[in-house]
Image (cartoon, rainbow, N blue to C red; front, top):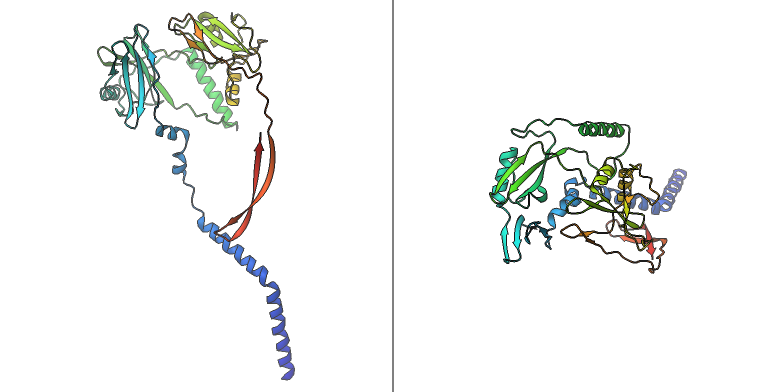
Length: 359
């Protein structure tokens, strides 16, 4: 019995030693397990609806107008402008000579007319109109409304497909085929799922007319600064200004590299950092490369000029360019560091890599 008791005492002592030796590690493991379980409890399902509220399209709805942009009449000294507040967008006509301001139209009546002409309900507070333009010697205002591509509009005549439409459909088919082959779309690009309907508002009679089979003007390329009368186009090549007339502009729209296009160089003193060309973002440069494909001019492709301000009669324009030639080039140095931060919830330290930039 004494021998058996001594053996039991040795076993108990061994177990105590093992438990003491493994104690700290076991406690650490337990703490880690507890921290992981706490983190798992904190994790929640992603809230995509909340994220969507902070997308640019949604945030822009929370930002309203702070200034007035006048759109001048060509036949008088009046101008119209739009102004957005929390109550929606309102449109006004201003006559500086008479010191008067009147509504351009009644939003409720325009919304009712659009609803009747399209068979879609529209809100008077937020009219979905875009690209307003005075036409017919300031007697009417033309504007656009976007609807679903497959939407059925009452009494809308069937549009006959032109050769350009067929070519455009071919391009869309090629794009879809490329996407199916795994080609990723560029950031910000969306599939074309809407179409545009054109309307005109008669200022005198307050009547809204739908323009069926209206041939929309071609979208102006990024590089073109077109005069109000549409007869002159200003742009940049390299660091200098160029111009062309409407006939050659039409040729350039059809084919960017058309060698029969006649251009006139306007300036010769443009240099790097004191240029007549606008500074572009990388994505804008990529967009221009696609549009200017085939243009092999030695001076460089057509690019947007600095902001051009045309006179009312289209005979003159003004611009402003910056001279940055004496501005010192700034070099930036980067350095990586590691910081330790105390995590109160789990009671432990975690490391975080930080990239510091010094210019």
